[in-house]
Image 1 (spheres, one colour):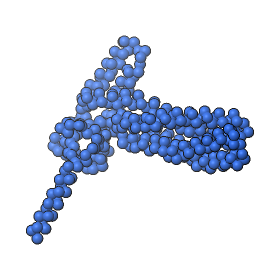
Image 2 (tube, helix red, strand yellow; image 1 turned 30 degrees about the vertical axis):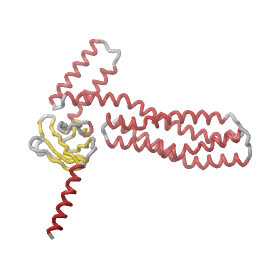
Image 3 (cartoon, one colour; image 1 turned 90 degrees about the vertical axis):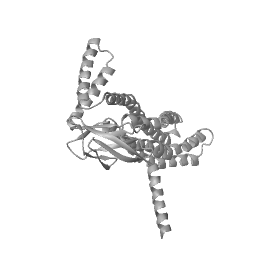
Image 4 (tube, rainbow, N blue to C red; image 1 turned 180 degrees about the vertical axis):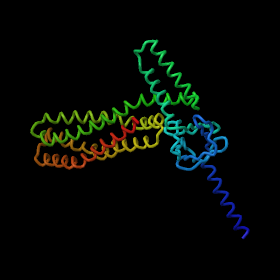
Length: 319
């Protein structure tokens, strides 16, 4: 019996050791933008309840390799003012303590005004020196208000860096996704055109060649930038739901549509080339037309779904 108890204790100790090795303690301070530290305040950290102590600090265990947490508030009269969307980065040095600023939903307008004014100054290249000075005065005034609301200068610099990242990558991501959708529709239409007219008018194959080239070019761009865009969205928007939506959209475009639907059409291009360069048989013509017709039935709903997903994602990206 003594030996059995010893074995049980050893096993329990072993489980505890593994648990400890696979987690670390994450701590953060919660501040109200006007009232200071939030004592004994309940909030959700990655959907788990945490409560601050009398210093406004909470401590929770996180699994190793966790790089950020999502903060949510259960009280309707409060909102997370900073960090953006409540996504708090886990510092490399765990002795550093992130600060989470909460307040009234109306108070968030100051940060939005600050960033909009920052963008206006940055983008207005034709402003006179007097106009720039006037804008700088307004920006400094808003910064003072934000500092009084418990934002730090470091947090404001981070917010501006994130805004710079959004302004840099949003046009590129949006344009390339829209271009991919457009060129995919063009490629499908070109195959339809070939099936109907190319066998009577060989010049119609040029349309297919042009469409395939344009589609391939934008596919290569998106495929090359796939992980970089994910990284930029994660860093500059800091919204897991947005990052996950991007992963779904790009996966649907490059995997579901391209790999499974459009890439196999290369075999039809090979057959079309065979037809026009020596093997002009009715059997080959019928085979090509039948296969394109079958593929069209499968591809059209996938294209429509991609267009829908892309529009929904881009709407979310601009919020």
